[in-house]
Length: 118
Image (cartoon, rainbow, N blue to C red; front, side, top):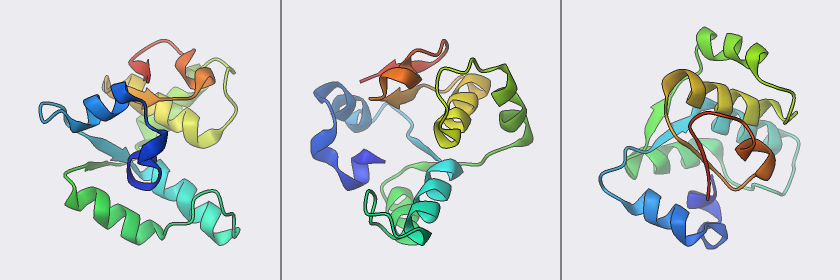
């Protein structure tokens, strides 16, 4: 989500990976779910309209990745390293689909599988 809202927070490695035309970029429905919940609670940590955010991601070549029942079930196999439900579904999606999840979160990066701390 930082690539759209706070690109200055991204590491050089993350910028390089996101800017590489050989990489396919995905975003999860979980990202929009989290933004919608934060917006409805009037939280100020991500003040963006989820509809506009989604449209901008699609316009910039990101592919929307839905949450499936297989992803939901995969959460039960995750160690209780991280409690955030949005991060846990992202981890499950990456694990099930074999898609690399980029993160700056040390806790998320402790999970095995296709997770890259950048």
